[in-house]
Image (cartoon, rainbow, N blue to C red):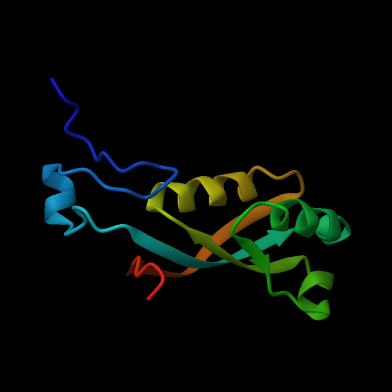
Length: 115
């Protein structure tokens, strides 16, 4: 018997025709996720943390000198699925020197392709 949980492909964002996806109006429509995340870290490790997290695909830093001296980074994460977004946040949180990550903004949009 097929698992009735969400059948979204983590890597591509493609969705299957499950009841959950139908109710979420996600059947057949790839969804693009954009999120802003505030990262609090030990100030003396902020440069290495910024380098480590921004080396990952889909993650950019938008911090300034004042924020980095205070141990804070503002990141933008772009992902093909909600699961990929959460996995990116988990990887950031697991980075040595990171104290906390907080989701500040999240936007979902249908993938419009090359339009």
